Amino acid sequence: MAVTGGILFVFVVAHLLGNLKVFQGPEHFNAYAEGLRTVGAPFFGRGWVLWMVRSVLLASLFAHIWAAVGVTRASWRARPVAYRRLDLVETTYAARTMRWGGVIIFVYVVYHLLDLTFGRVNPSFVPGDVYHNLVASFQRWPVSVAYIVAMVVVGLHCYHGLWSALQTLGLHRPPTVAWRRGVAGGIAAAITAGYVAIPLAVLGGVVR
Ligand code: HEM
Image 1 (cartoon, rainbow, N blue to C red):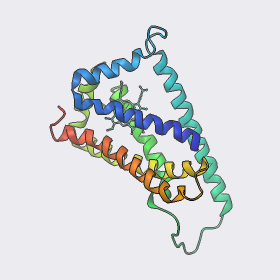
Image 2: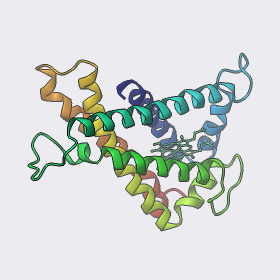
Image 3: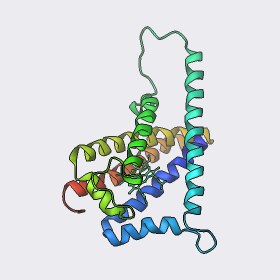
Image 4: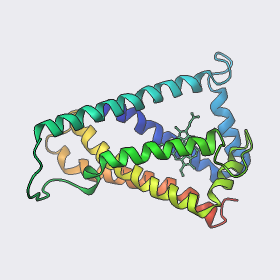
């Protein structure tokens, strides 16, 4: 979970940094999207590196889901009978919503690909004009609201994921314990704020 989560986390951060280029205007943003397809040229052909990255991401996603199923089963085996009374000690909302959060993010990514990559649910998809597609999508407020809710779920998932991945990878002794939660929370909040800024900017007319 920790290693595949780490790979997906790096994508989420890199994707955010790339998407923030939308604030530089259509030329920069579309050039960035085009640049993703020509990374590695002239050594690699068009889209080769992109497809290598996509393969690693897809493999990490399925390995992450597989690990989540394993962890869930182990947890259910350890406590086959439900608690009659549950006092919540040493847990957070983010920790308790990891499974449903993961399902929501999966559904979100499927919609997101149909929206901005394949254009199937986009109101006026123009291949290659990524800026236009993004604005067209976020101008419909229910879509923006759904994205914002999904970004909060992504933030919660990253918060607990980061916190526990750091523990799995060995940072579980003092003094790390004292700052691990704060660092995970700060990074997750920055990720959510960065992503949420984009649909808000379209709704507010800053990006149009
Ligand atoms: C406001 C938030 C987001 C915006 C504006 C956004 C924007 C975009 C755009 C414009 C594309 C198409 C890029 C292209 O065709 O060149 C894209 C693709 C993609 N996005 Fe996002 N994204 C957001 C959040 C997320 C999040 C949180 C995730 C993951 C949890 C994600 C996962 C993906 C994936 C997997 C692709 C396909 C990449 C590929 O195969 O080329 N996105 N996104």
